[in-house]
Length: 402
Image (cartoon, rainbow, N blue to C red; front, side, top):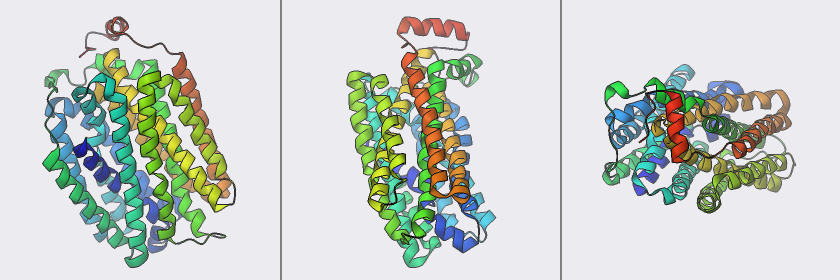
């Protein structure tokens, strides 16, 4: 868990390194707010594409080699970002960085499912997701003050340095998989396993939930810097970065919700996360800075409840439905990062078109979709081992249960 925490910090420091810098990039390169958000969206889009390759590849190569190689490659690419000579070059490096980052999120939940007892899986996944929250927070708290003092290039260099330190710590501490069984190359990505991962109704709704929930969070935080640097707030990037101190609430909420889910079930806990996030978005409509901070806190806590429970649910459901856990996790995270990329960019467009009410409207629509997916999940029966055998038979000869 220490090693996975370090890897998660490195991944999310690099992934979100530009979010707090969007107003600075807007000024430095002379781009629009919507164009500035591409420095985030292209990275998450590259990550989404990479997941489709990294998940199946891990079935042959193993979990730990892919994690180690992914984090190191992404950290090396990050070291090149401060030297970008133009906006297209910077975006190209960010896209490659996203592709390189795919190894960890593609296999993390599968790794945890294989190495941990089932009774501890939801709690452990919650702690892993909480570690991701710390990485995302550290990225913003590091880059924004450095940008205020020395500009965006030094801010990106600082993020790369932290990622390199985390990569070293991960390499020294990550144990090899003990329960991983490689699949023969001819069976990786067999049509039956893919069909099971794409046709199971619970998995499809979990994919939708991931896309819409993260889309809400990224759209709001992408537009946040533009709102708070303008009147009547006129905050500096360093001051705005302090608002990301709400991210530890994600660590708490994901850990607590994981423990509650182990006791009461994910179906009972998941709606609370959606409701909390919706309340947070509505609070941000108030002009008071205190209300905005409270709204961001509720949104962040609610999002990590949804994401933490959904990501662990995908691994368990895929195992019972006859799909590869890593393949289903790759589909979930692909949907998740497509949502981050598409809806994050729409957040910049919504800001340009309608100010903060436009951003809030987009967030409410996305959370409504999340609520519909959550409600539908409550009506889909659980799979038991006999049910899973029936699903495997219906999916075809390629759908095998571990």
